[in-house]
Image (cartoon, rainbow, N blue to C red; front, side, top):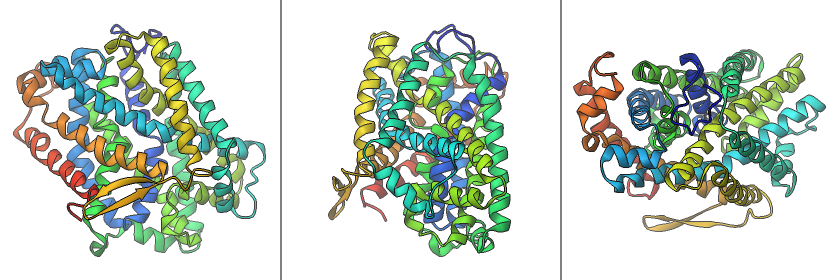
Length: 458
């Protein structure tokens, strides 16, 4: 885009390819490389991936189209956008749901992003992770100071960069680093599938659906992973779409973003799951899975230290490109809707986010005994800080936001939506199937998630 800050209504992306790379970069990040593999590993492998692909096909494209159309139509922050299109101020609540979800996600996203930077630096400096990379990860993340240094450093970098507006530098980085990340993932995947002992068994587990492993929980995890990974239900594409020129084909753009995001997640699974099987990794490793597995892979790969340095450096750029867009959602809301101005809004955001990052990071160490209650039918569950933030944002706020957004065209007006998303008919029309997807299929999946997370259905 131009050097004009993203919050300016006059700013536009410098090229369609640049926008697509930034939009894909906002989607492709920790959700694909870090979270998808351990959810797939834990959720039955092949059956999880099958359900995930089906859900992506049904949910991703129509929701990306809709959110982007709302953003481009209003060229404003998400709260104002929903209020204007819905013709009632109350619809602004949907934008606030997106803001709250984004803030809670960023509460741990910066922390995990800090882990990525730590690993990149360690590969560059020494490549030494000790004799047990899993213990190395545990010792690092449970320490009090060092994880905070990396997380808060990443937060400060993001805030300072956005302080001067997102410029064409973001587009230039995305154009180089995203293709590089894909290439490195493929290299790691080939090695993991051909060299790790037991890899073929892991590949079979990943590719062959075992329907006995299916459950409502698997479906709910696949849905929330789709929302988190693609970035729907929390106003991400409303924010990105605000700077799109009218000439862009939102429908084909939505297909590209959904496809790129899904491919990245599936390829990451090819890297992690076969290697995890070969190493006999506990399926409950969860957030530590990618760090332990990749450290093992790079430690045994010729030139692995160099490849590891490049891989985690590329992943840093994917994390940063995501964070720029995530923070922009709230920064733009503070600036436009609350009238705080960009600088004041970013400073206050940074202070509040630093507090949340500290709490989440300490939750892996000195505050690991802190448990927050979660209402469940017939009982009360207790989660640690990271798990509670992840559960509330991913299993409550994202599906709630997605459900309300899906039915939003009834209030905006289907004719108004069709004019915006098709460029006044230049790119086709809204079909009956499009309406069924948005008003029946999407709400159905969202209700399944919401009922499951509170134990109403299991």
